[in-house]
Every structure is written in C-alpha cells, then in structure tokens.
Amino acid sequence: MGEFVGGRIVPKHCGVWSKNSKYEMLSIVYQPETGDSYISRKSVPAGTLLDSAEYWAICAEYSAQVHQLELDVDADVQQMHTDLAQTKADMSKEFSETHVAMSKELTDTHTAISQELTETESRMQESLQQTTETLSGKVEQAQTDLNTGRKELNDAKTTLNKRMDSIAGGMTADSEILDARVDNQGTTHASLGEAMRSAEKTRGLWDDWLTTIVSQLLDEATGRETKELTFDFTIRTFINLNGTVGTLANESDSHWHTSEMIPVVAGHVYIITASSGWKKYYYAFYDSDENVLAGEIAPDNKSGKIENRIVIAPVGAVSMRITWIQVSNFMGKVEEVTRFLFPTNEAERET
Image (cartoon, rainbow, N blue to C red; front, side):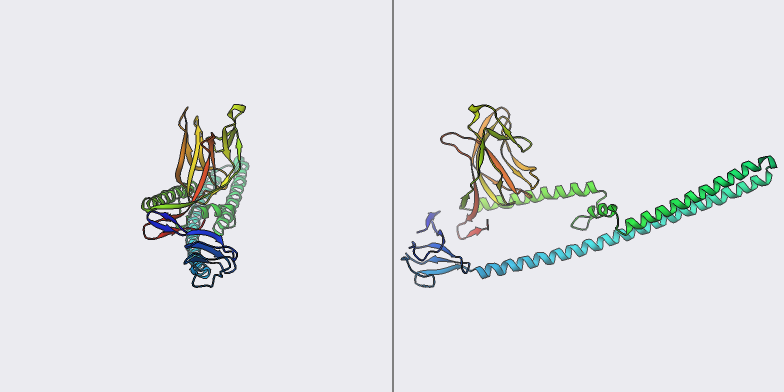
C-alpha cells in the first residue's frame, strides 16, 4: 500500500508490471508495450491482467504525453524560425547602412584628393612657367613623382573598394564579427567584447530567476521524493579552487574522498551531503568544458560538513563533483529531487 505523507497516502511506484506478481492497493505499474501506467484499486492477486477494471485503473497515457511533446516542439521550431528571420533582417539592414556610410566616406576622400591634386598641379604649372632651363630637370623629376603619387592613390582606392565590397558582402571573417555583435533580441552591440559580456550577464539573470522559482516551490511543498545517484570515487583526493582534483600524499589522509564527474541537468534540484576543509570545495558544478560554474568553498583553516543541502544546478551545468571526509557515520551522497508534494496535488518533472 502507498506511504502516509503529511496526512495523505502517496501511491507506491512498483516499476514494470509483471503478470506473475501480486500488488498492494494504490500501487503504480508501467506497461512498456504501450507506455501507459496503471494504479491498483485494491490488492491485486498474481496473474491478474491490466485490463481488469475491477483491480486496475489507468493513471497515465503515453499518447497524451507524446502529443504534448509534439506541441511543445512545434512551438519551439516556430519561435526559432521567427528569431532567425528577425536576425537576418537586422543583419541586412546593418550591412546596407555600413555600405552606404563607407561609400560616402570613400567619395568624400576621393573628392578631397582630386581637389588637392588639381591645386598642386596648378601650382606646379605656374612654377614651371617661371623656372629657367637650369631647373627643367628638377621640374621633370617633380612631374614623375606626381605621376607616381597618382598611381599609388588609385591603387589605394582600388584596394579600399575591394575591402568595402568584401565586408559588405559578408565574404570575410569581419562579417562574422559583425554578426557576433548582434544578440538574439536583434540588438547590435558596440563591440564583440560588449556582446559577450551581455550574454554572460543574461546567463546570470537566468540563474537568479531559476533559483527564485525553485525556492518558491520548495517553500510551498509539503514534501518531496528523491532518487539517490550512484558514482565512483577516488581516495586521498579533494576539489581544488580551480575545479580540478588534487591528491594527498599521506596514507593517513585516505579518509578524503572525491567523486568522479556526476551527470546533472541544469535547473534540476539536488540534495547534497559532503564535507571539506582548508579552503577546498564541498561541491562544484561544471559546464561542458569542465569550467566551474558554481559551488561552495570551505572556510579558511576549518573543516566542516553539509548534510542534505538543497542546491539547484545552474544554467549551463552538465556535471558535478563532491568531496567528503568519510567516517563510520558520515559518507558523501547526492540525491535528485524527482517530485514535489503539495497539499492538494503534485508537481512532477522528468529526470
């Protein structure tokens, strides 16, 4: 029969249904052939089939869950198309404005240079008319230098035109930098560094929002169900402040333990029992590149422990480690909260 929790009876989960097993009242079983789940109305004798309405009632239909998943996926795909279309429109507008600005600047530059060359040539012609035959060689050299300068200016103009067309046409790495400056809301940042800092700030805001929501659930819940996670570990080790695993040399330190990487899901709630000391991590969450995202560090020059600490995996987390100093009545442990229990209903999430 189910377990009494907070003045209520919570059904007992019995896993995959077996024809040869008998079940207590309020037992939930899973039929893998259909994906449906059933709950017993009363004590069920061995050999009783799931289609016996006297003993069993359906409590979860696989098809309904799949339909909801399809609706969610369709909504996400539609939103992605909308975001991509907006991003493309914003990029096209920015490239067009860049092209116009560079064309104007190039035209102004060319006009100024042409005017300067015209004025210079005029002055040189006046100087030639006033110069004697003894200066003719110098005048000819000046004319040669002038022609060389004109060629260099034309070459510079050609190079600048190609550069402008390349950037505006999106065929060089510069276009990728321009693209990276535009965030998913279509906002163009002044630099790539500013865009990256904005993204990091946004992730921090998501972490704060996620922590607030889960904290509200914990405050309102009357109980919870958990699943203990299993993991391997190494002895005489601890978690460094940079997230790596350090090693202790003495055999007397064999009571120090550190888990291997434990897979986690960002936003899920975990209950941690661990211990540490001398400014080392009790636990740490990591991203896909094994960079530390969050965790808790022991105070300086003190050993301590945490028991049944509720924590939330931050945005971007894919794994975690814990450290503990094992004694006869204390051992490191990680549990994942699979269900919150409330006075009138339950909030469930897939793990």
